[in-house]
Length: 61
Image 1 (cartoon, helix red, strand yellow):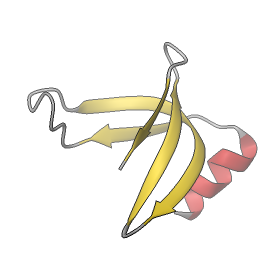
Image 2: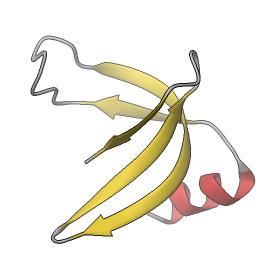
Image 3: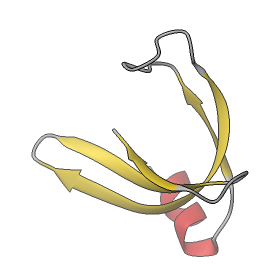
């Protein structure tokens, strides 16, 4: 968690591994993102992120 917090503050790119994709189970891979915000809702943490390649925003559980 501290690595993500530091990357958010510094505006650094991080590399994440998407190990599960409920919409396309065969699409798991490494991806580079700019982490924007950590959100805690109910019982889980979510990450608001900007895709490094195309600039699209999304969140992931």
